[in-house]
Length: 372
Ligand code: SDX
Image 1: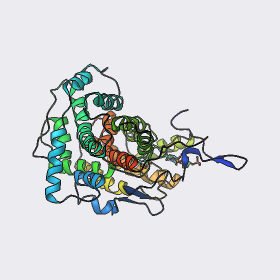
Image 2 (image 1 turned 180 degrees about the horizontal axis):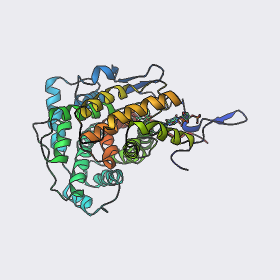
Image 3 (image 1 turned 180 degrees about the vertical axis):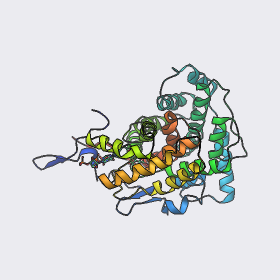
Image 4 (image 1 turned 30 degrees about the vertical axis):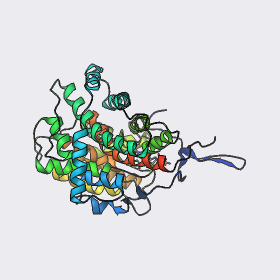
């Protein structure tokens, strides 16, 4: 089935109804995040995302998701030290990344590498809460490292260790580009990570919880989540947004381009959402970031203006709004991230939400096994 055509509608046989895609089915109770689709709001541990974005750092929100409260200054320093210390990979795993086929998709490499990390983690089969908390912090630290190392291995540049004096967002950009990023780029990356950290019972989080519900280990559950996030209907949409933007030469071409997509029944990537019936609250912040990053752009085609025009046209013709992936594409482009890495950056943040949900599943578990 092409990624664009989806049959919708439930199937009723007798008094049994199949809820396709589990739409609207409440699969679990969670206090990690809440997506209010009717009002277009998102809450991370009760904090409205609008009160976190631009105020907190991504790592403060990752701490919030894992520990249930925003860190004090001291707790934040300890957490940052812990993650910096864990932002390294076993040399065998780096060697494995070096021999991966050069054109394999970064999400496939990420999925493979996270799975292989379990073989080098002495606590892999220890499912105790203390061990799982340590593994969660290790994975929150290692996934950004995998992404940055892969980027440089692909360009035959030496891999870089994190700088202990800068935060996670700055380190990702530094370990990718090999130079200290500008302040506005650090702020934009930090906000991008914060906005992607968690989002209720999305497909990849659900996949992680299903895996954890069998008492499989955390690496197995995160591997399931990465495989699920890659899909273009989920985290893979951001890469396709940039592909679409590159096919449109200027704002005047937008309406015809979108009309042709809609006429073929195609989905416009970066738009629509299973839960939000209003604008995705994260889009507001990413739109602002994208506009700021493109305001002085002369060299580059102004992807922000084209995006903004697409947004107006799709809203007018289909009444649907941009989701987190739409403006994430132009923000990442402006930060110098190649599009094939966009979803790995999504994963570099969502790992904090996934691990929080995996811990929550283990703590109050029942095997997830629906009927058919
Ligand atoms: C993420 O779940 C999460 O929270 C995910 C996420 C997170 O943080 O974890 O928010 C991240 O994955 C965001 C979504 C990224 N995906 C895309 O941008 C891909 C494009 N979007 C669509 O495929 C779609 O909107 C989904 C998959 C996101 C939601 O699909 P649904 O709920 O199954 O809705 P649907 O496909 O049944 O569409 C309902 C109607 C249809 O109209 P009809 O054909 O019935 O007349 O809305 C239309 C669709 O045609 N529609 C779109 C559209 N999305 C919905 N039409 C054109 N383009 C679109 N993008």
